[in-house]
Picture (cartoon, rainbow, N blue to C red):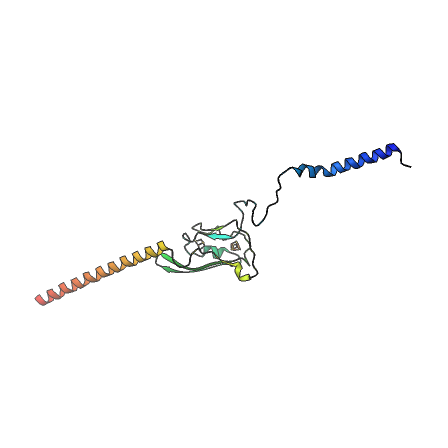
Length: 179
Ligand code: SF4
Ligand code: SF4
């Protein structure tokens, strides 16, 4: 038979255990929610995060050092050299293979390939995981202007040289006639 004192003891114990159980709930009850509504909102990402690469194409010299350093051959590039200028065709990175080790970044002599903070990969098509890191194909406007100017200078030099040679030949011919 339950005595009155035992009854009150049980009531006290149940109230106490409820309070202990709710302690953490109460602690967070009045705090702002910390849920982030991804992808509309994103948590801050540390600078050292190794996400999808980005290339500073203007600085890249097509030396292949990054591609050679990659242990699983993810990087491929193709460019045509016109004297000092580069005409870019492709610079791809295959994220089906990449393990985000960053080994391609360190040997770059121009410090132009980096790992960014973007990480989202969603696609039903595997070919979309081969990213082209180029921001433009072909030559940049500046590079094209430099190339055109260099070609112009070269042509002017060649024309001047040819004119000089023709002048000399004419003088020689004149000298020959006089003799
Ligand atoms: S992060 Fe590593 S695996 Fe990915 S491309 Fe660079 S070197 Fe290759
Ligand atoms: S190592 Fe740097 S400069 Fe050389 S090809 Fe790669 S990104 Fe370009």
